[in-house]
Length: 279
Image 1 (tube, one colour):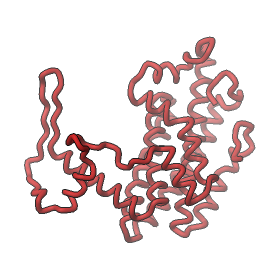
Image 2 (cartoon, one colour):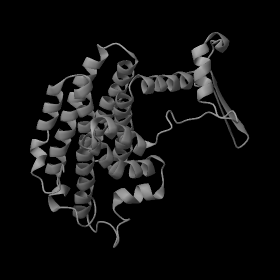
Image 3 (tube, helix red, strand yellow):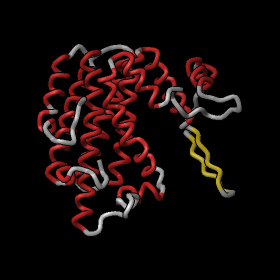
């Protein structure tokens, strides 16, 4: 959506504002769903409620950056928003077993965080908690630590063996391919470029400036303004799509059909735009 063939209307402040409203409306509905999830018992809802808190917080931070026209950092937050949104849907799709896996990962990670060291260039940085935990008296913690420790004693950092594509496939298997499409769109449009920006690569900087395109980037400030608006409008639309997918799963699992209906109505202002297709 952000190349030389992007529709002229996409690169306007008005379109950014419309798509930002689209994103914000989804975040409000996710907040409503979180309030319901908090009231429910069980591991799955405990995990999902926490993840939804992260979705709302990061989503609102992304909205702030969009309003400030901060394109590169918006990609970083969009990547974080995508990851958290997909994790919540993946946990819902997998149920208690996947939720318990997420909790085990968080528990052993929290324990490891109590004592950390860094050895670089002959220097050591160390952070130690002044209290103590007798791991021998915590069989569940022992098991979690063992689960996330490799054969060579290294920490296994991924909380689940499924990659993002496989998580989306799990969501599609339970809720249908149409529900999973929003996650696929975000994976396709945000995952790679958000990672490049977060990792500080040269490409990550040049991409948002538009200079990676054949023929170079914007030639004047007017073109650059349009280019930035194209990025921001696309990000808001795409992340709104991912949140739509999450809300579809929540509407089913929370037995809140009104949640899905409200999410559907959020599409009305953007549905007629020529670059928007829900097919």
